[in-house]
Length: 317
Image 1 (cartoon, rainbow, N blue to C red):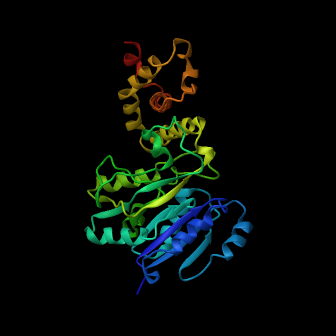
Image 2 (image 1 turned 90 degrees about the horizontal axis):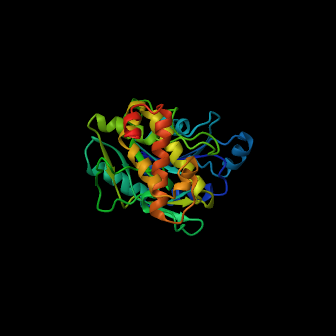
Image 3 (image 1 turned 90 degrees about the vertical axis):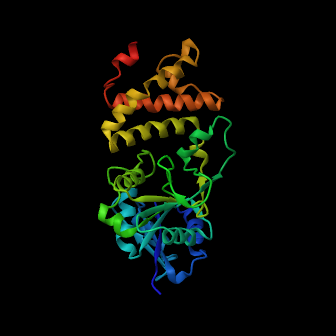
């Protein structure tokens, strides 16, 4: 009986949380003969990584690999090239997989035809501190919370998956060329470049291939204290704009023009004395106003990146 799916955890200097992720990977309900685990350690101290990895290198079930080339996209590609299984599932190092995660993913792939090449499920938050009052539901996606409800199905175009709970048919993933190295995080998170999964999903959808939403294939994902600040969310949406522009400059330029009025609408919601660039950094406990602020900041960043192309008439009408 050969393994069918690989659970891949990519990590960078997260030895305080990684053991829980590995433990959840080892305690899956799926027959252990049907899956394997690859940990790709991208930490800068390779000697420390090797020492830590010795306690977890348990072939044939668990392969702990040290990867010296930085970047999350590269680490995921390393896992994909070395898995040797029909499917590969990715989970973050600060996530905990439900016991039936892999079993539900494999069942979903088997239930649908070969046109279903991507699958993922619900992501429940593990709040390190209580959720702030200013955090609107609309912004939960920035901390990878996913819950579209319903049953297993082909995902609608607006139903995205999080990188901490996503699986692929390995062959088409490799034929595509893997994850784009220009996208995705590199290093310790000082930059928040993303969209490597979105680029992959868009590529498959454009070719008539399907993404599955599998709610029972769930994981819990840590939402750290350091992310639960208004400053972090502002940084996150600004980098989202950079990611969107990097992935598709033409679409990002059009979106900046189409959504520019949301910037103006936000500034009309705040006191006249705050209607300067500092308005983007106005602290508020209102979830709705903070949501509007983040949206305005994201669109403004897109506008800056595209040189305010196409915005002249809209801005001065």
